[in-house]
Image 1: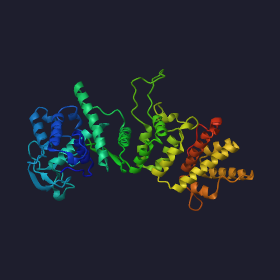
Image 2: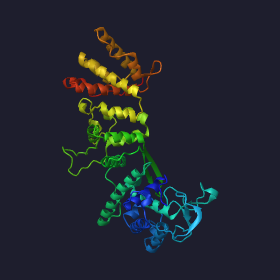
Image 3: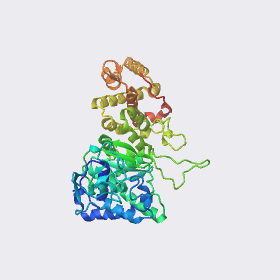
Image 4: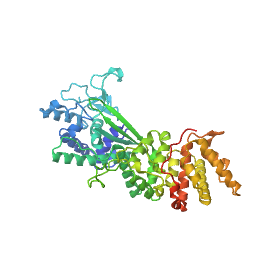
Length: 493
């Protein structure tokens, strides 16, 4: 009867039950599997650290209600009704479960039996309305009708979620295997955290070491690596993270989506042809320790908790066309982030094109253009060809001035004039032009003499290809001082 529904909290809860039972699919679950996780929750949801943590997900529920601290029998009654109404012999009503479409249960989900049978509210399912609130319900009939199976899945979702910044972080996907993988990873981490907290007598649930965006990418890459090792051909998928609190002090929800084409780029970066170069960028993006005065090396116990490349990759997904140019300039061109934190912990402060030449790679940027920006093949070809032609020109003519100017120009008109000037001079020396009308229009302009609004991005892409080629042919090794340390941001045309 259990099946994924598309509802994130239900699906994460179901995946948690599957992982707890060490199964792979919903249809493999047995009644004994449901009993096992219900028993675990009945024992652990009423004591710390889970009891205190559940105030984030199920405030004022029978598990967390302070009034029941002196009446444990009430908590037992509540747990029996909420966690065990999935039994086949439990009474059902004529209403349909809103998740599974099966008959809803006829059991009231409160200790005194005063609630409408089978109806759930905010203390049972996060972000729902409270008791007696008739708004948004048909015929003013408050609450949602659910079955015992659905309620069990919802109650399990915190176990398959990470605790991040005092909230639950749940990961959903259009690929059930990925939902299960995240739930299983977080379940394993939570089980360890629960055990350590209980042994230490702590009332608080420890949080993962990593910041939540970094945690999402790290866990996702673990899933991808596992698929690569098992040689399974995975279908494209996306993930959506739900960072929520159902606290009585103010319910809130933040949603973070990583589309399939972003994930496909990460998948490609894990392949043998790209992994080494990609991992160099990742290693250079981990947060640095904050050194005290007089210290020259980080403390031995320091563990980085934030990767700026991963964090910015997640931010990029929120508004790709607005943030792509800055992302490329920072990580692929190694241009220093002027707005980076100034306390010495932000590694981007140390980025510099002239000293990171070995990290600049067209090989990494080309699939980024295709998969993340959906740039057409013809324009990518024009950009690469122009970069090659300009690199060949700079090497043959040893034109350090042009190389430096191309990097520093921040106005479109100046860039156009500089290209025309050196191309004309090159032709006067009896050479074939390295810049043609078609190549120029294909890189920098759209339509009839209309400057491409992304000319600054196009210039950076051409420069990335130039630098890679000049580094490979040895010119930059002999002229490394030709790369200026700073460069103004592109201005409007």
